[in-house]
Length: 235
Image (cartoon, rainbow, N blue to C red; front, side):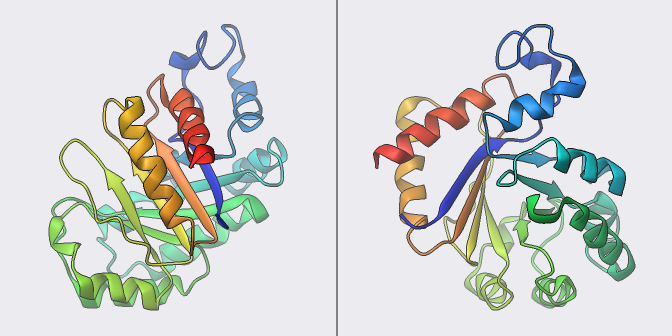
């Protein structure tokens, strides 16, 4: 298994984790440092709602180990409001700001709205604008995107298909780039289902350089991340 596998949660600042993953009276300002000492990556959804501030990202970088990685969700003004059209200025600003994380910057997740159907030219043009400046991952939530020509466009641009599992939609388990991005979003994962994912990840890890896996932010997410890590190590 040659890939570096990082497993974490979608977010770290959750009061619901106090007394479970976090000590009961841990201050909010200490959560990231505590989290990063135990899990190697986090997916940030805050950046979907608001453009991140450089100073905030620089502060996060100082609180985490050098091998920790932040995956940032691209702003909704790019994916949902503009729907990937005419976004060059906003995209450039976001990428430049994200780079404040330095080596701790992981993939950028472009989560498309569920009512945006397949548009090959749109995707091709947008990936060209990203121009490999960040590790781009695309979460398609309209099933029309799950087609071989789309996957080929992504392979040509070294962009990752977000392998997502929800209660309503499961994407193909396909690697389209040198890095792999998974979002495991079902309400419950028992040991048999985690074991199945461990086997799939082990297969994906063969040709990949990096794999990023994120569980939903519910109270069990850190525990699920650690359990999946242990199961992968057994494969």
